[in-house]
Amino acid sequence: ENVPHLERYFELDREVAVFDGADELADKARYWLEHERERSQVAEAGYRRVLAEHTYDHRFAAIFAELGMSQA
Image (cartoon, rainbow, N blue to C red; front, top):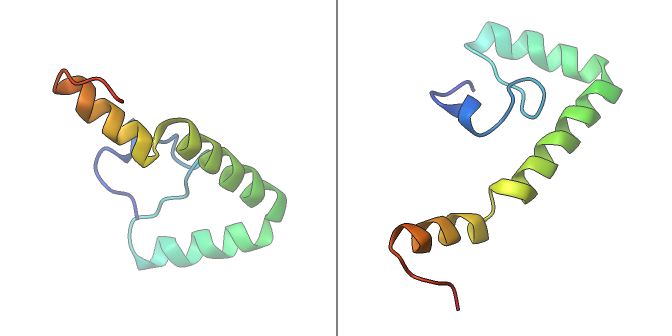
């Protein structure tokens, strides 16, 4: 589902598929099922983005940095 600020973390429809409402969800589900290569590319791009920027290690490092604490 398309949620506020998701575009801060991912490129929409390039790294994550989004939809607004049930009708668009059904349309996009059909589209992605019919376009396997493109679906795989988006999934891979999203996976790479998660590993590069959105793991717990990244989150805790940001929290510790904000608190002025170094990671041990």
